[in-house]
Length: 363
Image 1 (cartoon, rainbow, N blue to C red):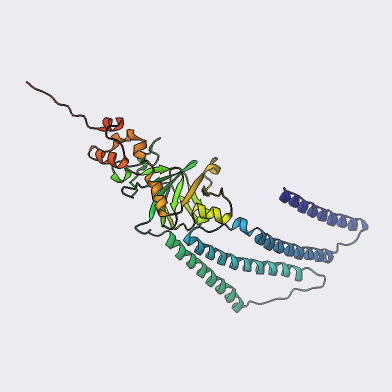
Image 2: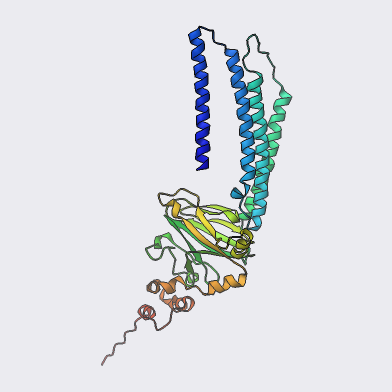
């Protein structure tokens, strides 16, 4: 509400100034005076300088006062590096912005129109042109290559003991697929096998899919490398985990990856922020349709790897939750599928999937 009042106040002040200048012009026109371009230019030049000062002061004030509202705590190892690179880039661009702004407004003020003043000709200065071309090129190259090195690291291959999690985006929700504790490997998928229940498109001819399970929350272990395998089923989506400084598009038809190491559990962050109700959250930052706003995904970081592994062990395999799909497992692999998925051999699904033996007697 206060922002609205301030905005209306600024608009009102600008409207009043415009009316004052307009009335002044009309009064001079009635009196038959010749337009005094020089005096109006001087007034506008001082107003431009005032505008520059107020704008720069407001920019600095807002950036300092509201710093905590846009600079979230870092909860990943690489986040400290990306934040450092971000603030270096911000410092360079802000310094350049301030210098250019002051120069632009100062030249507008100093070289405003004045009666009797003549313009002077200034020839080319090759040394000056080389300086203002080479220095920005060197600074930009350093920024780009520093960022590229960090980018190659976080999108490169993960370590052998990394936790691999698949995230799937669709209109308008996220789902996560985890490998089972028996093999710790995600099974293959095929988009042609996607249906109402098999939303991942699990290829049940691959034995690694038998103990994969679905989660409607993203669970992460503190202090262990995590690799996200990201894909989309329909349109472009984008995974955004702000506290972990993770941002990666989900693209239909291909996997994108992002690896990171969480450094603060949910409990740690609740203590740090003083908010007992704090929870991490994953959002979609690609406008993907009318329900884009609803693509919010809960995230929980466990205090220890052991706690994370206990949670993993407590989850049911997707195949156990959907036993009717046991019939789509190749006959030679069904027994292994029942064991890995935890499907009892005497269950209805197991009996239905068992091969029927027909014995014929001949006299």
